[in-house]
Length: 311
Ligand code: SAM
Image (tube, rainbow, N blue to C red):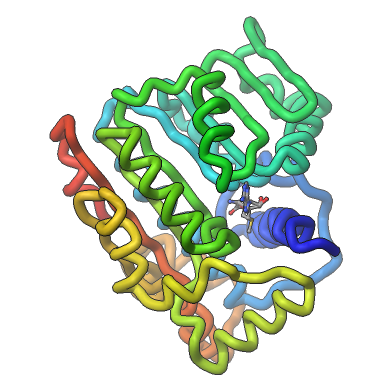
């Protein structure tokens, strides 16, 4: 499998893991099963809790941003894959003015196909002015566009086609995506965003601290599938994760290892999910979580209080 195909395949893995955790009851998502068939693999409790912490923490930051801006904002999900956040926000009456997803055209084509053929997905998209091509979807407030995140000219063009207004507060999400992009190129993307969006928030979730033995095993495992975490070396720790934003035009950044993030999640939710599956070796979870982090960064030219958003 070519490297790009292997990166694209990580989307199927993520969606399958999410579907598995949803079916176990970790969180509610009636849409993920419409995106990906049920896999045959069983996933260990620490994997499921990892996905729970990942989606809950990103959700917390995203909803704080949307509420702070009274929904007068835009969401741009980079490398969105089969993410179902659009439908969740719609159901929760938290739709921003625009919600745009970008991924490789091979991935967006499959997502457009699922949407076209599954009524519960299509029904939530404003049907009046929907335009579906092979790779892209444009509607009043939801857009899916196929592009390579390293081709900034294409990204600019696709965002223009989606009607993005750079003067409006905009949140960017990269959920396990930048790590697959060469760090010079992801640095350029991060800088391009800060150059073009005066009031912006960035939520990044990905691998970190991969230099130890456990990290090497994780990398070897991916490498055996031709999948390389090309972005990982320059972002070896939390400090460099923050620096990649502050040295590329962002006002400030914060980064937490997932063990800390987990403990910031609502206690009642943690109590609920910890009852779903018995975990006999919590150390495994601690070890796994120490290799993932959540980073958020902002620049706030409109002074709307973005520095107040945290977990
Ligand atoms: N964000 C989704 C989630 O968390 O469920 C998908 C995560 S998956 C691990 C990584 C995604 O990033 C894939 O859908 C892949 O196609 C996308 N991706 C990686 N590099 C990309 C690039 N250079 N341009 C566009 N998409 C990219």
